[in-house]
Amino acid sequence: MTRRERLMATLRGESVDRPAVNFYEISGFEDTSNPDPYNIYSDPSWRPLIEMAARFTDRIVMCGVPFKNEPPDPAAPLSRTELREEGSSRFWTTTVQAGSRMLTSKARRDADINTVWTTEHLLKDADDLRAWLDLPERPSGGEPDVSGVLELEKKLGDSGIVMIDTADPLCMVAPLFEMGQYTIIAMTENELFHKALRKCSRWLYPRVEAITRALPGRLWRIYGPEYASPPYLPPSLFHEYVTEYVRPMVQHIQSRGGYARIHSHGRLRDILDEIAATGCSGLDPIEPPPQGDVSLAYVREQYGRQMVLFGNLEVSDIENLAPSEFAKKVETAVSEGTGGKGRGFVLMPSACPYGRRLSKQALANYRVMLEAVGAMD
Image 1 (tube, helix red, strand yellow):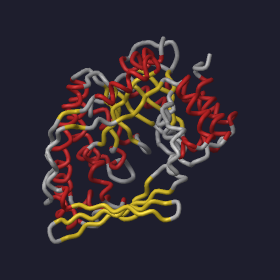
Image 2: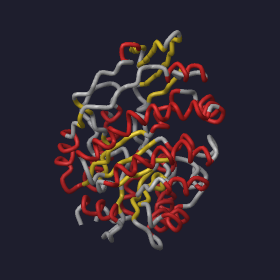
Image 3: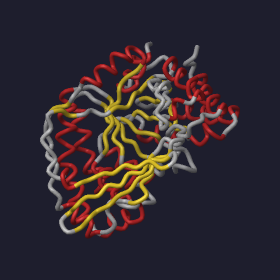
């Protein structure tokens, strides 16, 4: 089978010649030549891994879909972002005039670490949320610009597939707060929080529907549900804030032959029924204990007929375990992910390293993943 054929058969629940293996964020398209000091992949240590991903993995390339001819955002004139450089770091400050309140957020990015930290969150309390809700709503409109996806699919050829990436409504609201304050607001201001989710849904749902019309039959990743997973919120609120808002997204995607994959780190046991109730056809990353609280074998047995399972290797193990020890983790994941009856399985880590230098040990462990399923044969 070609790598594309293997992935599509896996998504459809058909038999495959071997389990698919994917490096998650590392797809082989990372730019190793860009001299931007914030491009960690320019370090030579990354090149062997990127080449392995391109040559041997069943490539699943995440991408968004921009829109063209969008109506103007009436709230845009109320917002201002300033960027400054200091040493080997970038700092952003965003201010939003929301009625009589000035909302402020700050973020930081360091050159040697491929992530952005929010150092001050936009909303600090329920009154800030009310002010944010009173901002003019961004209208949903325009048309999807599918050229990027089609060009990426052309470049991939038989080596893999594109996965369309989108937040859910919860992921558009929760990060506006510091995590502790978010959980307090979500648990004590139920109706106010629903108003925020509905506001985001009115913009998001039409976009998802428009993309599915223009690009039917693709794999999607919906991220954000983990904000309502234990221990942050109880399962009853996962139902309210995730299941009820994600289900319409899944329906749009799968009504046109697509595959909706839910992304949720951490504890799953108490919310698996709710995840299944969205109607999704995939789940990642299914982290093993102690990061998670349920085995891959359990998820396969209980929910594997509905969902393709993606996982369940920890990136911390890739970075820290000797290859001989990591091989045992991989063997367990493959055994549990393919055992018994189930729709399909893709061997995959929970994330990827984000430091500038990739260690030789991490590179060796990525090779272990490929060797375990015969991807380099």
